[in-house]
Amino acid sequence: ELRRIEQLRRTTALTRRFLARAQEQAHQDMAPVLATTLRGWLPAVTRGRYVDATVDPETLAIQVYGSSGRWRPADRLSAGTTDQVYLLLRVALAQHLATTGETCPLLLDGVTAQSDDERTREILDLLLRLAAERQVVLFTQEETVLRWAREHVDGDRHLVRELTRVPVA
Image 1 (spheres, rainbow, N blue to C red):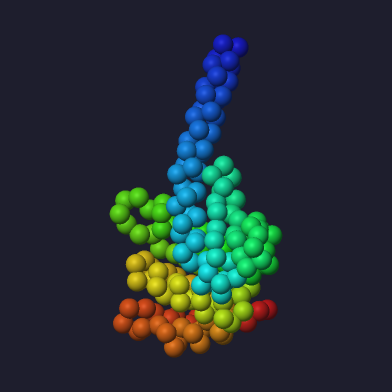
Image 2 (cartoon, rainbow, N blue to C red):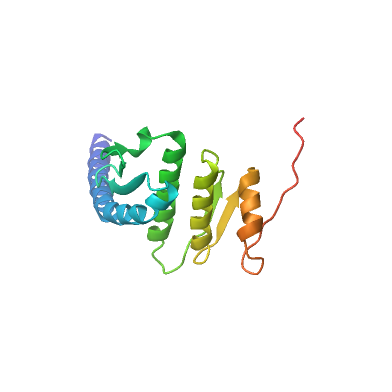
């Protein structure tokens, strides 16, 4: 029994080392791709306040560079800007992790809840551009988003579905 447990311990340790190396390699491969994608979308979504991004290959932590002339960790920005940066990261991941030549849909809920009207429009414009390549399903309770959709969504290619509100008991 002791031999079996020792073998299991060695196998587990070897598996952990293998997975750690695989994670390191995946982070090193993905970090520059994610940073490049973030750089392309960040200025528009943040109204030019942030114009560059880096992604740490070890931790995938994001930093953004802005008009202050400093790099700032994405998780230390305002709640709205942090949400926007991580939305862009999720979109970039979806775009780059699909390796079969297929695109995966984006299912998003309340992604503009922390955004002002101008940033909301920028995010929705980006999502509409992305919808040319992939299915984007956006759930929201915001009237601003509904008004934008009524003005910009093409009924032949896109659909706005308004759900009936359920009264809270």
